[in-house]
Image (cartoon, rainbow, N blue to C red; front, side, top):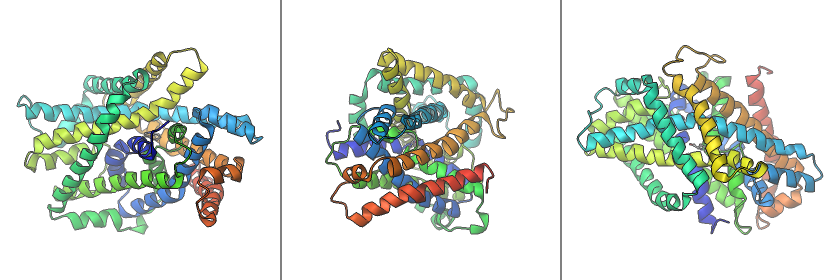
Amino acid sequence: MWSSRIAFIAAATGSAVGLGNIWRFPYITSENGGGAFVLIYLACIALVGLPIMYAEIVIGRRGRMSPINSLRELSTTSNASRNWAFIGVIGIMAGFMILSFYSVVAGWTLHYGFHYFKEWIGVGAPITDPGATFGALLGNAGELTFWHGLFMLMTVGVVGFGVEKGLERAVSVLMPVLMVLLLVLLGYGMNTGHFQEAVGFLFKPDWSQVSGSMFVTALGQAFFTLSLGMCAIMTYGAYLPANVNIPRVGVAVAGADTFVALVAGLAIFPIIIANNIDPGSGGAGLIFTSLPLAFAEMPFGIFYGMLFFVLLSVAAWTSSISLMEPATAYLVESTNLSRKAAALIVAGLSWLLGLASVFSFNLWSEVKIIGRSPMDAIDYVATQIMLPVGGLLIALFAGWVLSSKITREELDEKMPNWAYQAWLWITRVVTPALILVVLGGILNIF
Ligand code: TRP
């Protein structure tokens, strides 16, 4: 049981805030042309993300077990089919797939942290051409595999070997420091003379640019950044004390996550514009090719760069834990494997699948799956399809299968009735309809 509301908010925010905010959000915003995309993304957070976050916490707290067993138990007591537990299976698979490439990108951040460390102690060469430095890293399959493996081991360490006590204490200090670093970068960006342009790029919508795929991408990002659609937040909800107000903690977590993403965007785009990089050029390397330009100029830039990438790795670490936990918990419950063995198996398989992402940039750079590189294909199927499908089913389950007596109790009886009715009908109708329209767009139904 979490000791308090704050402990739950810290754990859920630790899961939510990660590479999704600081690496993925800027780069897909860049690829999707800014303003209009950002507004669609914010709408997805409010109309799809938040209601599903409530739904996941409600199911988790009511079930008090791992996702599959909670869903099975709650469907039995609601006289519904036990097949609803399948949501947990989709979640396990989606988490496993996301972890595979998440760990590769977290490996890049570890590598950059180490690079700046070497430079700081005077044994490494400075980054003079960030594009070339990043390109060289991507070309080196062995190097990428090593850092990917190291990050996966760090994740197993927590999930399988229970080293979370120390991590928890460290994180409660380190994450605020990361936030301060971002705010300082934001201040630096404001001084580049291009802050206004960056604000315009991020918030001035050019509706002529809107396309169907933008909605698909924005919806996927809303799920990804809030850790929704795969029962991760449900797992955390199982430990939430009964007297904690779910709407309040949900807003706190979603608000903090959105704030970090927007600050990251506002910090990064002025640097991009000031260095004459086309803000729409995008690419998964965006932060790795732009931030070093700022670190090269700032006072104490080397130390700063080291701190930034190390702390970003820590933020990724607290997120990857929640990606690995559901699959591990499932193996522990349904086989007679020990927790250590289960975690090692999940990590080993996910590491193996991650090699497809590693090779996307070198050995397999010509390979295309559904028109994408192997890494983008895995990201696309898990983030853009599986998370929304999971979220759709979670919303339907919470809205229609659970009795409104249960959801009313869980969402706090002190909540005004209109607010509860608003959640109920958004979750029953609006959220599923939006997800269905977007998924229908992928399948070219509309
Ligand atoms: N939300 C995390 C991030 O933004 C990634 C993450 C952790 C995640 N757990 C998840 C994404 C569950 C989807 C589902 O970096």
